[in-house]
Length: 386
Length: 96
Image (tube, rainbow over all chains, first blue to last red; front, side, top):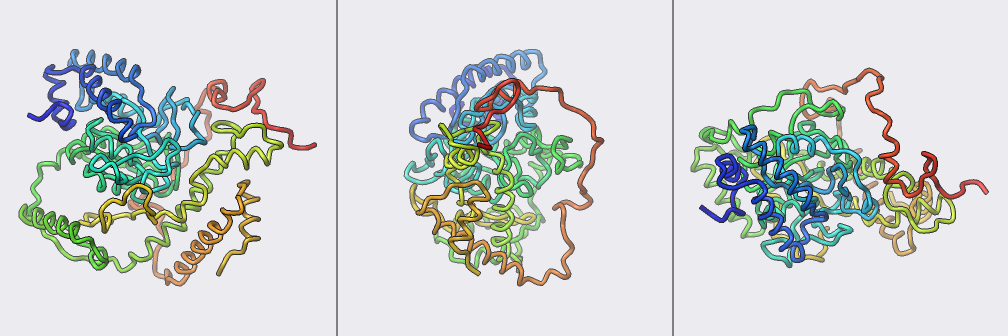
């Protein structure tokens, strides 16, 4: 067996259930690692050790009483885009750097109800706009595999935290690649569920018709355990889907024999880095060895996805971010002359102004497709990502 | 189609954003590019495409009865406000 910190949620859950380790011990272990690597990686915006240890003690009681579920007592982290009652929720921005949420997001509420222990809030690109985690007001996150490189974004703090095993799993959000791309760059598993599957209530909005909460984890089994607890209808989100959530973990052992997987022709037509092409080829061979059927497919409208995204996302972002005006909550400039001055000066705190149109995000995959997320290795920090 | 400096200054004023002189060319660039994307989309023939309101079939916008579901928590909510007095949000003078 590997070191405790390197184990999956499923393995840790077994350790907790059999009483070989307590949630308080696990929480101390992961808190210790998170604090130890904070200077190097900057994966967290807030670490809440005291609250976490209290939650862990409650989880231990639940486990002792035999009422634990698969996530009871498991330390996790939330992307700082999810509102957490009584804790700072900054969205990586100066505009909300002093905002203490008065309520919990549905995702937070559900994971709390499942007994997961929140260690803290992970770093992210400001208002989830960015793909390198360099736009955070709280400083860039570094890639644990090579601190000179970016972890991807906008859920870069969550991806780096899972990759460095500061937590076994974390939440993220994805509008145009913000879970999938950092998961790829940090070598972890990430899933953006279908729109409407996970409630957006209490998840700070960027582009409401594209935003979706999801998971960054060590493997698919853990992602399924997390998503099962997060997903499902929520009447507080008018776009939440009223459909039963499938038994996500039930398909894990299902053989791949005969499963059809599409290979997007358009992605392979563009120049891929040779190392990455080799990795994809070996993934294809591994899937074929399991009996999966790979077929080249074409999405002729694919070139329209980028223009569509960059018209829809900035328009919705502009509506959603208009509320940050320095009046009801968030950052307000010092000594404004008048109301106009208050708006204009307060919004100088927004680093992401005008950036939505610049950043190259990554777009939705359709159905079950094998695809390459980035045609090259992660850029070095400070390099132009456009 | 390109965007002029005057357009950007006007939009920034309406959006209540203060732009520095160095920022304006960046905004001209970005806005011109967005309009280019709109033109690209305008050239696509969508006459045979059914408008989609949701990626999953059969989903529609839900309605709910117009009923009060929240209790009054203004004190809690106003704890985040920069300046409050007697339950009101304070801002600088608007009219001289």
